[in-house]
Image 1 (cartoon, rainbow, N blue to C red):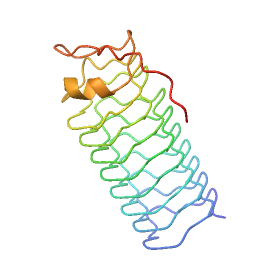
Image 2 (cartoon, rainbow, N blue to C red; image 1 turned 180 degrees about the vertical axis):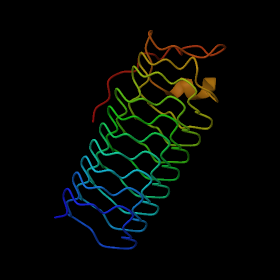
Image 3 (cartoon, rainbow, N blue to C red; image 1 turned 90 degrees about the vertical axis):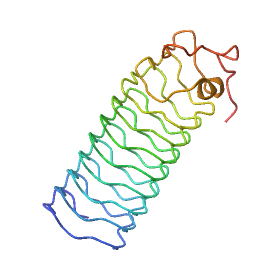
Length: 206
């Protein structure tokens, strides 16, 4: 139990922190690389520029935490909670985030390339300038979002929910990607791309 503690810059590298509670603690610049943080609470903590490279954190809770500039590259954070985090400029490249929740998060300018993002919730998130290149976004929810300057080069968009999303300012998008995604009549596409006849997709059984 380490809530409301000042752990700025602390070195936790390769530690076993499963089921620990760091809610509202100051952990800016902390080194948590290769740590085990499954089911650990970081709600409301300041983790700006913290290092989570190659960390393992199934069902970790980062709700409302400050992750600005944090490094989660090659981390395994499947089924974790990132709702309403501040993660501008954070690095999630090559990370596994399947079934995680980023609803309401500020991800402006984040690097989320070559990541596993199947069934991730991005509802109401700010994702302007995010790099999703070569990521697996299958069945993730991007509906209603503004994808201005979002890089979708090589992204896998199988059944990705883009209903009502504005992709007109996205880069790297191809007709082949649009054909397997799920949009609606309200989805805005870049010039030269057309909504497929399969839109809107049928509701899927879970």
